[in-house]
Image (spheres, helix red, strand yellow):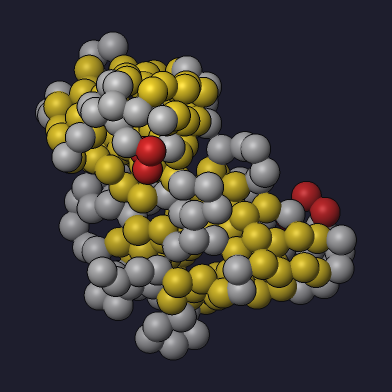
Length: 113
Length: 114
């Protein structure tokens, strides 16, 4: 069964600090891995998409890494801001048509001043 | 920036009633999706739609569910006879053609079944 596991479940850090969120997946066949940000009461917003041939991708202060051999990904956030408080969801596409995404349960990140 | 819009934002319905959730995808997008998120749980794929037909569906998407693109702009999800366990947030998403394109999500419809 395709699964995406994330850790930690929740994280609290001080504004300005960096943090790294983890994702492990057992999805086959693998097409791509995405990180989404979901603010409370809103729909998910795409941060990065990586195929199996990419091992790092950045979007501003967000940097995602992918190790397709170990089936692990991380999302690193630098110089955190209060607006980064949200759930961060790791999502894996299991076929090359991008038709069926498997979502992780997310990491709830809280930035405190 | 263009957005996916969903209406209503909150729908309250009696068990056994039919409900239609509406979505207006981004105008040049050709692939459309519905997802649901039960409170406190992960987002789950329901169905994908392309070229006026379902391209893939999950085991959740049983005979009680149907999707339609009635005109050039709307994309709807119908639940024929709602059950208590259908209570969830329902998200619509759309994307451009091409591989590895991001899916753009609406802000969802919260469906509450009484």
